[in-house]
Length: 425
Ligand code: EPZ
Image (cartoon, rainbow, N blue to C red; front, side, top):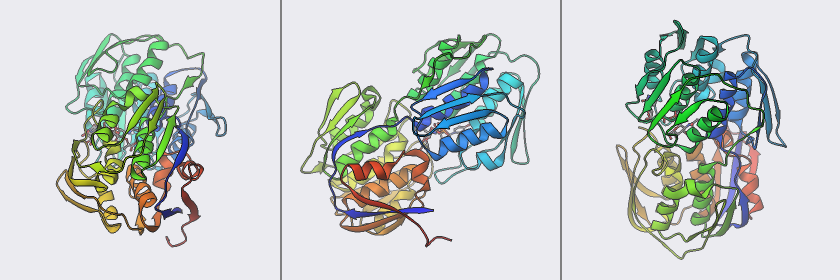
C-alpha cells in the first residue's frame, strides 16, 4: 500500500484538467452487458474501480481491452456466466450494477450482496423491490442475490422510497429490455443517470424525463452503439479542485469540466467568499480571497450539494471565520474524516448527522489515515494548507476515484510524494 507525504503550507498555480467521471464510467461500462456487439468507450479515467469493473466483466466471460494511456476501453460482452462473484463486488459496491443488465439480457443473475462500507450500511433493498415489481423472482441467500426472470419482463410503475443513484441506473437498464412502459418515480437526477439514459436513447430506447425525478421509458430492441461512448468529466473531481484552490488560497484554472453541473458547488463556495469565475461552459477560474465566512450547508441528492463534496467543503469551513454547520442527509456515517481532521487541529464536533465547525484554524501537519474515497481527498486538502508534514496512509481509497491526483498536484506546484507504506502490515 502507498501513502502520500505532503509538505505544507503550499499554494497551487496553473491549470488542471478534469478526468472522466468514475460515477458515470461504471454504469456505462456495465451497460455494455445489454448489447450483443463490441462496445467502445473513450475518456475512461485510470482508476482502481475501472480495473475492478473490467475484471468482473472478464470473470463472467466478457473480453475487455483497456488502453490506459489513451483512456480507451472496449468490451465484447459474450458471457459464459451470470455470476458477479463476492471477490469482485467486495472491492467495489458498484458491482451491483451488473444485476440489471444480466437479468434483462440473460433472464437471471447471481450477484454478491455489496455489503456495507465505511460510510454506511449501503443496502440495495430498493433495487430488489423494483426488480420484483417487474416480474423478477429475487432470493437473497448465502450473501448473494439470486434473481430469476419468471417470464418476459413487464414494465411497471416503480416508486423509490429514497433517491438512489445506482438503483435508478439498474432499473433504467433492466426496463430497456422489458415489454411496455416503465415509470420511475423519485428517480435520481444525477448527471451520470442522464449520461446512461442518453446512451440507451441513442441505442433506440424511448426515454422521457431524464434529469427529473419522474422518468418514463418504453422497453424495446437495443442497437449496439456504433460510435465510442465518451465518458463525461468528473463533477466531484471538479468540485475537489475548487476546494483545493480555496483551501490553499490559490488561483487555479480548471478545464475540461462541465460547469452547468457545478451550480450547487459554486453557490456553496461563493457563499463562504471564494471568488470563482465561469470562463466558459468547460472552464472555471478560482481566485484568491483573504478570508472566508462561515455558513450552514446540507447535502442533498442532485441538483443539491453532493454528499461526495461534504468532506472537501468541511476542510474549507475549518478555515472560515465563525461557526459553520454541515448536515449530512444521504449517508449515516459519513464523518469519518472528522477524527482525522481533528488530529490536524480542526475544531469540529458532531451530533448525529450534524457537524459543527469552528474557524478559522491553522491546520498542523500530522500522520492521518484515509477511510473512504472522499475523506482521503479532504485529508490531502488539509495537508496542503497545514503547517508541517502530513502523511496520508491507505491512499488506495484515493486511487479508486481520482486519476493521478498526486501527479496533478505536483504539476500545480504542491510538494507531495507517493511512497510505499511499509508501516502497514
Ligand atoms: C452513488 O452511490 C455513488 N456511487 C456514491 O458515490 C454517492 O455518494 C451516492 O450515489 C449518493 O450520491 C456511484 O455512483 C458508483 P444511493 P449509491 O443508492 O448509488 C440508501 C463516491 O464517493 N439506499 O444513491 O450506492 C443508501 O443507504 C461514491 O464516488 C437504501 O437504503 O448511493 C443511502 O443512504 C460514494 N436502499 C441513500 O439511499 C437502496 O436500495 C443514497 O444511496 C439504495 C440506497
